[in-house]
Length: 517
Image 1 (cartoon, helix red, strand yellow):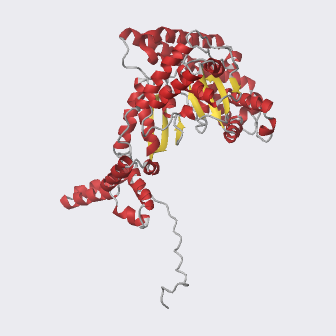
Image 2 (image 1 turned 120 degrees about the vertical axis):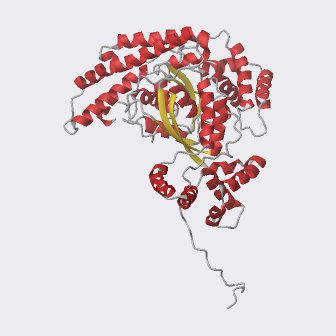
C-alpha cells in the first residue's frame, strides 16, 4: 500500500538514548549545539567534527552572535594544586560549578607549604615568613595535647576498632587546631564547570586585588587552552614506543593512533578565548568604594549578633545597601540605617552611575539578587565560612578579610590547657598583619588565621534555608557552623514558626555527636 495515504501513520522512530565520551569538551559542545540547527543524528555530527571545525562554529555562534548557551555544553575538569586558602575561596565563589577541596579535618596540612608573595622587600618578607612559620609550628605543636585531652574525655566505644577510634580523635583535634592555619596555607582542589562559567570566573580572577589570584586567572585559562592531562597516555605509551621502534611504518601508525585516541585532549580554547577583566566590575567597585568611604567615614562597627536576621525593607534600600556592603566592614543593619537617610535623588544618581558601567554583554552583579528572601548578616570564623560557602545557590556578598572583628577560640584547646599558647600566636599574627598591611597592602591578609572572623551576607529562599540548615546541622558537621545554622533556625522560628515547623534540624550536642562525625 502506498506510504503517502493521508490516514496512514508513519512508523514511530525508535527511541535512542546513549552516553558519549572520548571528545574534547569544545567538540562535544558543538555536537550538542547542532541539535538545534540540524536534522542529523548526533552520531553523524560527531563523526564529521574536528577541533578545527568546532573552533569555526564557536567563532561564528558564540563570539559572532553571542550565543553563550553553546558554552554551557563544554564541561571542563581542572585541578588546582598549591594555591592559598584565600585564592581557593575566590575561585570557589562560583555558583554553577562543582568543587572538592582538601579537608582540614581529615588531612593535617604540610607546614612547609604556604604562599609567599613575590613583591615584598627583604625585611617585610622576613617578618611575614617568621609569623607564618610560628603559626604553622603551633598548629603542629597543639595537635598532640588536643588528642590527649579528647582521649581522656571520650573512651573507646566497644563497637569501634582502635584504628577508627584514633582516627576520630585526630579528626576532632584537627577541627580544633585548624583555627591556627593562616590563610596563606596551600591547599589543593578540583573543579568541574562549563565553559561559560569558566570564562566568567577567569574574568573575575584577573580583576582581583591579589596578585596570586590574578595569576591564577591566567593559569586557569592556560590550562583550558593547552592539552589536558590524560592518564591513559601512560598506559598506551609503551605500546606506541614498540610501534615506533619498528621503523617508519610503525612510527606513522603510532602517530595515527595517537591522533585517533585523542591522548591529549584540549579543554575549550575557543570558548574561553575572551576573558579580559570586566570593566563593569572594576569601575563599579571603584565608584562604590569611594562612596562607601565617604558614607562610613565616622562609623565604627556596631556590636551585633553573629547571625543577624534582617527584617523586610524596601527593595531600593536593599539594593543600595547590598552594593555598598562589600566595600565596608560595617554590619548590614548599621549600613542600612546610613543608606535609608540618603536623599532619594542621591540614591538614584548612585544606582544610575553603577548601571551606566554595565556593558552590552555584562550580566548585573550578584548584588542585584534582591527581593523576598531571608537575609542573614553573619560574622563567623574563616574556617566555618570555608564550609558554608559551599552553599552556592544562596546569594553571598562578601566583605574583605580583616582582623577588626576579633577571632574565635575553640573550647577544646581551652579545656586541653593550651589556650594561652593559642592566644599568643593569634595575637602575634593579628599584630603582624596590622603592621605589614600599612606597607604591603592586601598581601598582609595571608597572615590572618582561620580563627579570624569574617562578615558575609547570605540571602536565600525558603527551600535553600531548609537545605542549608538540615545539612549543616547534622552531627557530621563542624561545631562552629552547626551553631551558626542553629541561630538561623531559631531566628526564623521566632518570627515565622509555621514556615520551619517541618524543618528537620539536629540540635548540636558535642558529647552525644562525637562518634557520629
